[in-house]
Length: 276
Ligand SMILES: C[S@@+](CC[C@H](N)C(=O)[O-])C[C@H]1O[C@@H](n2cnc3c(N)ncnc32)[C@H](O)[C@@H]1O
Image 1 (cartoon, rainbow, N blue to C red):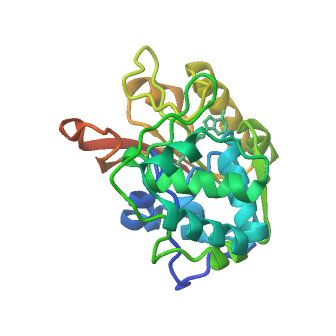
Image 2: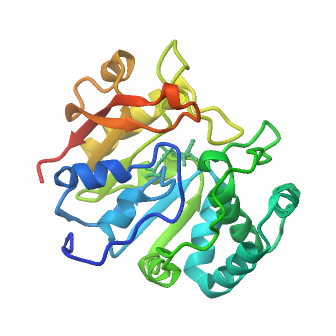
């Protein structure tokens, strides 16, 4: 069992991501366990919790293949990726943005550079693809492609002992063992109401996916896995997790909507299934 090391230099997520958990780690660091075996995160997104915990061995997954390719490229070849981002930075303009957006690359470094470039320069940093799986967000106002905070070398080191999976969450959740820490942050679908729904991929995260997830988590908790789950603070989700762990809610500023008027405070549900 490893303890969570304290006072490591701070590494921030390098992507802006809908539903990102920077706010959770900065406002509620006490929620996370201090002792655990392996770290597993099946909906990693921008990895705010992973970068906060900085585990020595981890399994990260997400159904977004381009996202996982980006992590894998930073892990294996961050230097070439950084060089290409510097080139994108010099070339950035409206024409270049739409040219890159329209392209499909085979090479993993070019693919990852496109992904980070679009994430940093698109409208509101929002990842969205159409039904054909093509990224379709217009250009935004931000022009910095290389950030002062970038430290791909450090991220590569953190990822050294990390397995990366572009897959549905179930395989990772089912592989968690006693005393592993499983952080679960799925897209927020609620029953009968898709207003708060976030579409990351060409596939919907349906209510059936939420039920399947709940069943896998129930099994994981029975195996002695330390599970922390976040989800929409909605009656249907509270009903779904009744009887599993300790349920509380936390307030956060909502920044997902491009419409400033739709922003405000909202509550998120936390289900915690361990003592420390
Ligand atoms: C709320 S976000 C996770 C945010 C992350 N905690 C962060 O700090 O950025 C949910 C993630 O689930 C992924 N996802 C959607 N459906 C999935 C599935 N069936 N299996 C695994 N990942 C999925 C999305 O691509 C998205 O990155």
